[in-house]
Image 1 (spheres, helix red, strand yellow):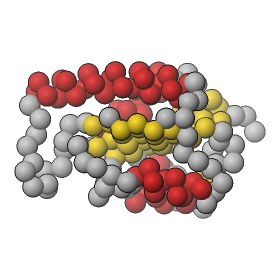
Image 2 (cartoon, one colour; image 1 turned 180 degrees about the vertical axis):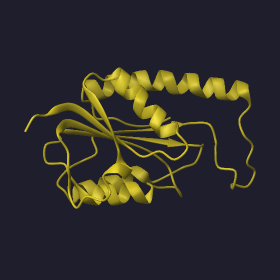
Image 3 (spheres, one colour; image 1 turned 90 degrees about the vertical axis):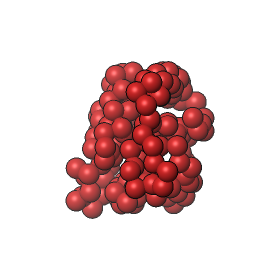
Length: 164
């Protein structure tokens, strides 16, 4: 089997997580982006990389159902370093606890994880107020800086657990 350097599996509803995955792909050499929804009809999903990442939005304070289904079907035997990046709109979450629990059943660990606060895009929440243009520009700049930091951590295979 030919191994890739990095595979990033992503799930995105509004585009925030896709944008983060694309930015990581630009920053990390030899990275393939793979949409999670394109694999859900398979019985077993085998990775081909030594470094594997998951990028997804927070749904109901945890991982989306599609990501949960994906993780149940994924064979991560060749993965030596696993990371996760969650995007959110200022909410708390327990997504990485859930992923860690699922990976442990497979004999793997979540080596690094990161949470990025993005522009709020859920109009159902009480007190919903969209960010101003100035606030969005500031958030985007912060995310860009944090992605530079995340890229360095992933390339050096550090173990880090960060909420931003």
